[in-house]
Length: 247
Image (cartoon, rainbow, N blue to C red; front, side, top):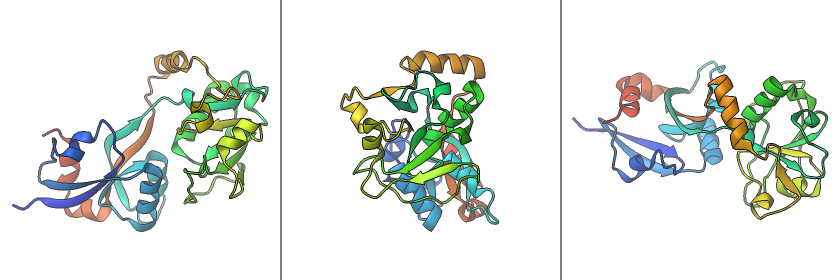
């Protein structure tokens, strides 16, 4: 019996590299592995349903479930699971010394409100530190000159204040200059990587904080899952099991 030929769009993770190089094969399936940056992947799928199987931000997937005809079905495969206390950056001169100091501040977020790497920090700040999601103003847009996206398929709720930064502005530069006070992002600010003393993490010893969070909550945060186009799944119900199972 001929194998089912499918495209799989996913970033080049260590967890998926065996699928990419052919060391591991899903039973009954011939996968063409396409290496696609996550934000681009999500856009191409949600707008055009371009790939048969794809990495998908969990927030984006959950949001599709409210549509009249949800286009995807997720399988319990998570190419990205990360603690996100480390993903909260501050301008060192912003006066932010504790999570509660974020209240009333200007917070950057890559691309659009709802970026997966910002959802967990926002929830943690609200649930663990009493910083409601609607207590800050969000500035969204390009991280730097190379990381720009204009895709925002799901709008925030009415009590969230979001400002779009200008086409010649970047969140990295705004954080370093103090135009924004903080930055929730799974993408490390380039200026921070370059050693800027004007940018710091809110939790300097973030590993200890994340270990304490896991000990208390027992949660290992899911960032991205893997989805199958629903019409393909409906024709080949065995496919979900095949993609999840070890050969």
